Length: 223
Image 1 (cartoon, helix red, strand yellow):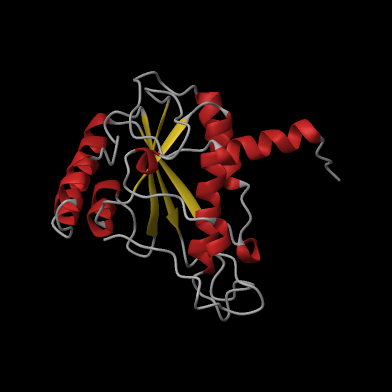
Image 2 (image 1 turned 180 degrees about the horizontal axis):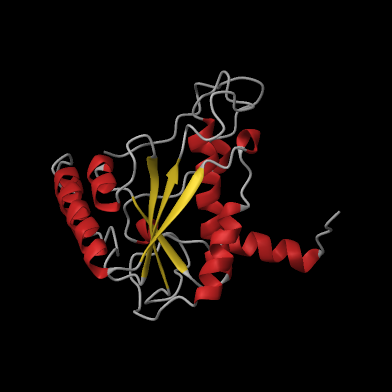
């Protein structure tokens, strides 16, 4: 059994609490051995039924990244129209992706047919394959932080168009499109969207329920 000493525990929590969504990158390449360790960490994530539903598409080609960035640009413009002022103007000031800036992009996908139809643990909760894939994303992100590598999750994309650009089969679901590289300005002390005044961290006490759902715990939201 692997034991964690005080310094080991400190390192785990340090990676968790200092992980950030990075959007600005320097052009330095990510060493192959470092990228390999990060991907291996992702592949060692837990998965329901040990199904391991993920795949990783590593993208370094500039033309491919530009094609994905064009999708993101249109998706961001469409999303901006859903806000009212002054939120709309604030949205327009945010840098929401670093696709062409990052030396590496990684698309993490989910294969719902892997080991199907009888995947242990998915009889009543079919989406466990996607949830498991998200654990792989989190492992990747934390390992990257420990390596001094920044990661940014780009969610402003149209999945069917991303499939076309990356030749992803129709039954495979793109779950996360990640920008990966050394951060231009280091790792900020708090999440970027918190620094920019877009959203504050919710107090944990508002989110913890005991024995059953407590309807009085309703965090404030913005639109």
